[in-house]
Length: 306
Image (cartoon, rainbow, N blue to C red; front, side, top):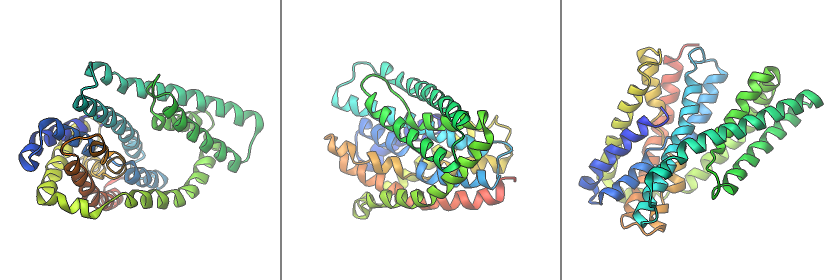
């Protein structure tokens, strides 16, 4: 789930984009790496809601999708960086760059585990109220995000994995406090969710998306079909029934955050097909974000067992 769906979708786009859009294979690969990312802005709040309602939690389906989607984004962004570097001729070794994927995951998990344990010891000693504990946890999450940026030249680290690991450690070590913090965070998320979607929407240029036309929409559809096959293969041995597997497939459809963040980077970097890449990236948000969100809500309520 962390890489196979993205690899299959990226490969399909790399093959078909030159035929449909008239771009080179390297430019198609760059586009594929952008489109292959699942959107945490859509997936995370919905999975948290399912976890709150205890839907699919017995088999850990929402947790699986949360964790895998975070790894998926780390994997895709590293691959995108490699391909963009290849276009600029700045990378001598692709293999060394690929090593940054496990480096980012392992370092993020290690730093997150240390942070989580430190917070557990702090809460055990000082018996803070739920509101103060939540503020401390949020501050640590912000600190981990800052640390990711600061360490970029020395160490690859995934702040997303680190923040998730903090939550896992707290849940394992002090479950009653973790649930109290979760309740407070769910209230903060009401505002944060609105802000997140407004920011994503503010980056979408509908005119640019329309320039991609039918060829762009067809390419996105081909990529989604390939991605769905990859996702289904990924969960074959997970012990899920047919509907639960299809729910995982639907959950990996939405695209928004990553595409909005890096869709314009190739254009700024001087990639020849930069405008086409941006147009298809924006079009993918307009098509998949609402359809994916509706699909997840519809199938989750009907197909996940409480």
